[in-house]
Length: 403
Ligand code: HEM
Image 1: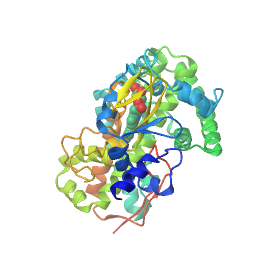
Image 2: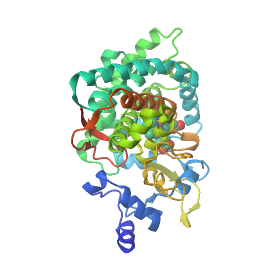
Image 3: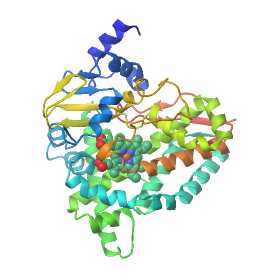
Image 4: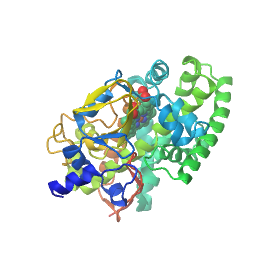
């Protein structure tokens, strides 16, 4: 696209009216926005930001920006809806002191020691799944592999009985799907039903855990015992944790496999130098960020990129665009599994930075490295099917085969 065309596209960009092509490849439009309209005023009066430096600053600034979304989710979901109760009660869409209280327990439960203890289980699970793939020869890398890992790990962290985990993925997709920029009546209905069913299930689990909590150190028990939460706060934060730990990590593993299989030389390099797995996962997070969009509300007058923003202005922070900003990342479109430094914003930054990033990294490192090592003949079998989502980037299906 030439400069004049890019400028027109950037000026006319409306995140509430996205084309089918956008979901396949949003990056050309993001590049146009970064260059011509880095602080872009959308038709609904909100702003869409795409430069790394602006996002990095906003994520770290609690004085001028708020995570509290009640004013936004009221009109979007209806103030009496289950979706409203869920999204306005989970820690991610709140400010201190409530946010700090809940976050403290989660961070404590996901300490480096806790992560180390998870690793053997993750490795055994990944190896078991890879053996099943070897037996089948043709399979879907999402349903048969990527999606099976996070549900197990986050299920274990909260000690959700294995036989109850079946509906978790569908609930999670429906609840997080309701955060999309464009929302249909059906999506909203599915999201509301999922919140009702999910919380009804958790109510039973929490009652059970209260009866048998002695000595338990799982995440659910910690929140139950130490965070002084009301019943609704406890339920909605558990729903959030199960969701947050789930679809995003599935997408990281799926996107990572897609990148490695489409860049065979990177797969070969990783196979011969497994130490590269840590930087390889960071590069997958940067180039195909599973969570592409974040939001903040302006709480104090502030100027960003030369634009004056008044209180109550709603901001969409485009992580997917910031992570390909040439001002921060040399040769930003290149997939470089040894890239250093790589200060990407895939987990955001500041006080709300992803509390589960250690868990996500562990899962992805084990899953990608073991796959590359154990299945050298792995090939994609046709194109994948992308979810029609702007916020969460990943595949619904990714058919593959062994040659
Ligand atoms: C690749 C996988 C993941 C990605 C890309 C991701 C991304 C993010 C991002 C961007 C945020 C900040 C949201 C905001 O403030 O606007 C966030 C918050 C959060 N994430 Fe993750 N996440 C991932 C996996 C996980 C996992 C595995 C867990 C739990 C085990 C988790 C738990 C959380 C929690 C609790 C928060 C809220 C933190 C707070 O508000 O203080 N995430 N995540």
